[in-house]
Structure formats: structure tokens, C-alpha cells
Length: 310
Ligand code: UD1
Image (cartoon, rainbow, N blue to C red; front, side, top):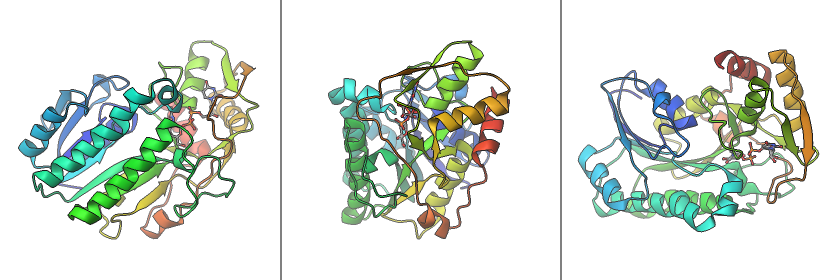
């Protein structure tokens, strides 16, 4: 993407700021982030980066921003990313994860804003515990938590608003993204950021459940490539794509790999499995590959690059 005006909601967060780092080279970037999990230091310093510390829930603010800036591309990445957090605060997180995003779509509709494309970041959580593996975009969905319910509903809003009102849209289902700038400061943070934090601070790491649950971990740099591809590829329209590497690894195994790469020991204890936790998560990414995507980071390469960045 070049010579474009781009909105990234949640742009100071983990995935958003990695995206901003890449797009800032050739574009004008607007970031809206309430800094609940994101950090201003995550953002690249540039005259072409315009930062607004604001919640996307503020409809008036978002409407005015959309009208003023006339964005070419919109990445909707702002969310309460923790599944457990949405179980504790379902109404509050629904405002952010769903209603605020519907407001953005509706502002585009009502004001007849012409955009090149809008991308909504959904999640593998929509598949829930349906036993079919690997998970295909056409697989049965089974959203088990407020997080997954809002993500699934928003996917449909993005796609069907797009079709109904002629707005170019696409949605992604992220599997477990890891890498630099993932904030480990909440107990609900992504598991690999918590593992690395526990090593750095000599703390015990708690495995919830037996550690045999599997995840399809994808390095953030691969995710950024997928995001750009989905934005510019005109075949990726009014549709949803898995973003992963197509490798399932158990939590115990990924911790072992982490120990090998870092040369550090992760001190473990075990506790009860989390309510609503998904047992097995493993993606089929053939749809994304058809557009030309190729993951460049195996788990070893990704963990090594991540460890180097810390
Ligand atoms: C994650 C993402 C979610 C994304 C989804 C897609 C985060 C915080 N959540 O959810 O946004 O949509 O993947 O697949 O990035 N665990 C422990 N100990 C800990 C923390 C976690 O054992 O201290 C376990 C969890 O119980 C879970 C696994 O590690 O079984 C992964 O947990 P987590 O990183 O929170 O991710 P998901 O729940 O898979």
C-alpha cells in the first residue's frame, strides 16, 4: 500500500503498531487508540503518523474523524483482545468489540464515504470447540464466549454491510498471533508474551489445564503481510480469511521450544483450565495461500526473532 491515507484503530496495540511500522514508510497513518493495552512508545515517530488517544466507542468523534480524513483504507483492529476479559465484562466489551465497529460501518454508509477497503480483524475463537480440524473458513462456527460472539457478529456486519451498501470490505480470522510489542502486563495477555515475561522476571508460569491444548501460533510479521495482501488484492472481497501458519502445537511443546531458543528455563505450575478455553485450534490456510500468502516464520524462526527483540 502506498500514497494512501489509512486509519488503524487499535494502532498503538500489538498488531496495529507492527502494521503502522510497515505502512508509515509510504503513507499517511491515523491511529485511534485508548491506550488500554496499547502504548504510545509502540508507534513509529513520523510527521506522517497522526495519533488520537481516544476510544472508538465515541461515535461523534469517530464520525467526524471519518468525514475529515476521507480514508482510503481502514483497519479495524481495536478490541478487547482477551477472551477471559470479555467473560468478566461482557456488556462493556460488547460496546467496544461490536457496537463501536458497527458505528464505523454505519458512518461510512450514512455519509456515503468512498473507501478502497475496510478490513475487520476477527478471530479463530469463532470456531469454538467444533471438532473439525483443521478449521476452514467454511467450517461450522461455535462462538462460545462474548469475545467470539462479538467477533463473529462483526465479521458478518463487515461482510454484509459491504454487500448491502456497496462498501469494499474483508475480514480475517486471526489465530494466535505472537511477537514484538505484545503487551505482557495483563494476566489475560497472549500466552507467549506471558511466558517470556515470566522468564525475564524469574516468575513461575501457570499453565491453565494440562498444557496439551493446541494453538496455531503465527508470527506478527506474517500477519502484517497477510493484512496488506488482503487489503490490496481485489479478489479478497466480502469474505473472511484464516490468518495462521497451518501448524498446531501444544502449549507444553511451544514452551519447550521457547526454552531451547532462549536457553532459559520456564518454571511451571499447573492450575484449572480456563472457562470457555478452546481445546484444539489448527487452521487450514489454503484460501489465503490462493491469494499468494506464504508464511515465512516457522515457530522456531518466529520464537528466535521474538526472543531477539526482547
Ligand atoms: C487468543 C487471543 C485472542 C485471539 C485468539 C485466536 C490473546 C490474549 N488472545 O486467545 O485475541 O482471538 O487467540 O485464536 O492474544 N494460558 C496458560 N497460562 C497463561 C495464559 C494462557 O496456560 O498464563 C493458556 C490458555 O488457557 C489457552 C492458551 O494458553 O489455553 C492460549 O491462551 P491465550 O494466549 O490467552 O489465547 P487464546 O485464548 O487462544
